[in-house]
Image 1 (cartoon, helix red, strand yellow):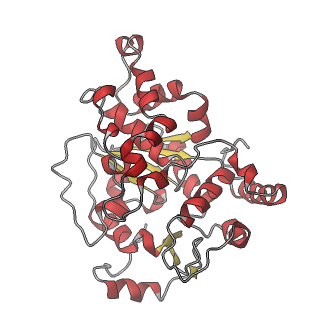
Image 2 (cartoon, rainbow, N blue to C red):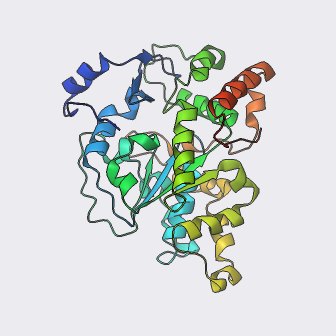
Length: 326
């Protein structure tokens, strides 16, 4: 990873950098998507926050990093990781998730902790500290990659991911004077990987390869697998994090309790997630819960669009061993 030669300390620094970067129209119709360090990043995602995160974050060996492409099950995995790692502090009936958004309990580096010119004091947080990010693996700070902290990555069938991302992007249109792009209009950009934190294949492959090379460091999960067997994957997650469920916990149904607490329907129907808003962005918490279904892409993409995009994905992933269920 190479950070910007000059720290992006001011808005002027950022504007100078943007003049040098390739740009694309964002899915919400704004010309505000920039290719930075191999990733397509919306200006709204806060490039200065990305730069500050890379320069200043110092990982601890007990940290847990929840990583993903946007709209791949991030909110769900944050809730699961928090519940598993903190279960000896909070029982299911007293979990902070009942009154607090998963994104507040597991804040994003780029858009929460290091946004708005902040340099947060994270040393005071009790272990294990749990954070979220959408950055490519190669763009993570060296302290994350070189320490013993754990990285849990979740990916999703790319067809469902792009549909969910498109729907999400339309909820946060920045300029009322700009017409929203249709999915058909965005399709060419999507096929080139030019959308938030894309290209998809580069984002997922970085973590996939890291999970193969360092399975004790990076756990690679698939949204569809969690939907199919959440209990098995919760046990897998707990084992990876070094806090396996005991025989007594399994007999008492602790695994199932966490699965119920963190289920899509339960989280979506909690008051905080129906009516609350994100503190910094003002985004409604409800926007982070759409359908949570597998295969919903068929309602939005034509067969030819899906086939073409999957052909691109297959070509990009050739030789990696990574596959997706359609």
